[in-house]
Length: 116
Length: 111
Image (cartoon, rainbow over all chains, first blue to last red; front, side, top):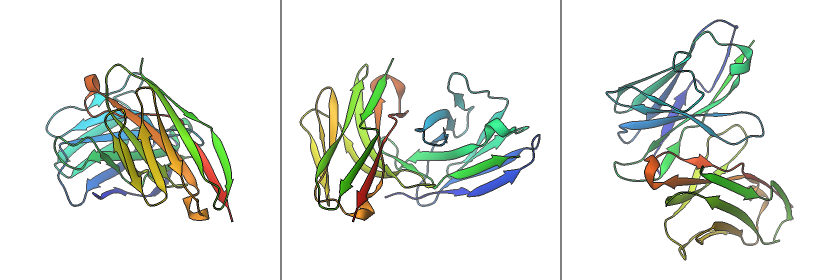
């Protein structure tokens, strides 16, 4: 299957700082990528759709000014958590469709964010 | 509103004891139903995509089936390494590539 990577895998930061998470498609191009958040013992919740060359689309209830998304190229999307607070601590996962027109999404390994 | 419900929440099996996981869905126009496996602290790993009622797919000890209302993930003679959380997700025709996930079934297979 297609490979999606994320960096960093784990980050600990102080409250009020900003954290950037990268999502890369390693062996394919992705005009669209998705960002999810997963709290302990819960399922994945879609936060936003990242679109190469245009603005991201955010799900209802997700603050676009807090979770900045930039789809810089066909293989890279970044999620920046601005002014992070302890309640932002979570597991952030990105995904991408392996090929244009395909429905199957492949997921990255996730980034564990802990805000102190 | 699109809904996906998985049952049971947790399942404990003995090695070799076959069973099934259920995923019930209520959506406005199913485009596809997906099964993923997730190990603790990792991203979901793709297993199957099903598109139409009656479709079946198999991979090693796993077989996924689909009806108009639900999907089953059958696990035959499971091994301890099959222990994981199994996630079901749906894609609807009006929502592009967006996935809506169920809460998952945590499977534990004891040796």
